[in-house]
Image (cartoon, rainbow, N blue to C red; front, top):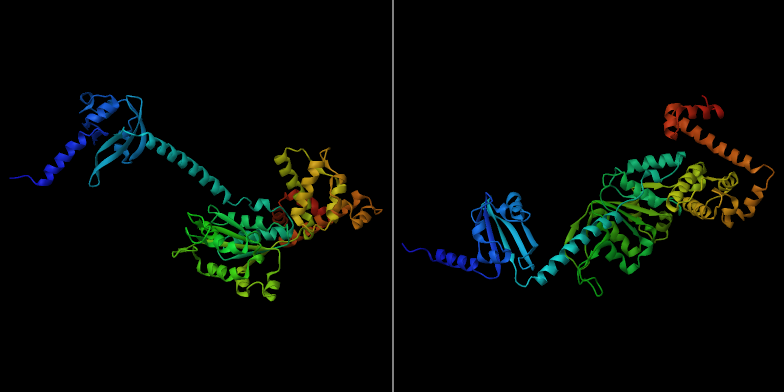
Length: 465
């Protein structure tokens, strides 16, 4: 019976492939025995076929990569192979399957005109390493940096704020953070993210005040390649898409243009975006946090902020207290900043003089915690004794006429400081005891001090109810 034409063609092609002068080929079976090797493989490697055929592939000098491919089923493409002539060749290794079963493995070596390919592979490997590096850097840039420990304070208002952050972190509804400039709104947003189940996801911040009006849409939604004149040829991912499975902070939300507000409202409601110039709708999962130092309800009355967006953003509200309303936190804030400055700049500024602390208690802190930090940063740079003195402070604190008159009162500065400190200390202690229903152990835990310390303070201020 005449054999089918396909079998003759197959045999013809197999002979042509085996006798080619461009690629070397070697095949091992499932037991690792070399069952086929063509002439070109012999010429490229310098190893005679008669020495390795029907023998285990491990006798061939090298790292046994083909045996690894046989064992794991994972192919290896584009490795560099040095020939017997010390030239570079390209080798591909891959498993051979019969159905779902591995029956062997094959190596193909390309030895002609490999210079260009070698360059491409080296560039590919370099780009792969760079991509891994930049992905890690991008991950770090998208990560939140501040947790609850960075919100320094033991005052009742700060204790209450931290408790609210822990509660709100479990909620996926929008959160609006309000407070004066310098109160720590961004720190709050970071802490909300890190206390949530999204802590390992991205944290994306958009400063609405820093984006030109005509760029808002592309920043929010991104765009496809060629979407408009001047667009990046590869397109762009929008900030909301970057925040997928994480948190997005819209800082200074009050500056969001009126024409963008209905589009933001739609993102919040539908949790989906469509890139500019695209037709694909992408579903997103993100937690939205907004922050502002302005009263949004006033902007609603002025018709510069949409009422429906305002109520959608203010489902949950965190209001940060100004520093002047929690001056009992001044000592721990100063200690926190001094420690961080000493570590960052290798200073050795150990303390703040009583005169300076007295000024701090008297000052109204219009710039809040940020102003305190800047004042201390300046002071540690000017301090030469390891102690921050009055002369290290800026003129707006020491040159204030009202402050000067208060400092020059007959009561000595040390007494003023002591009285101020004691007053705040007693107020703080009493507040903690009331909140703990006068249970001293619970009050000590609230304040973060030991029970003996709390008992001593209670005796000192006559709070032994």
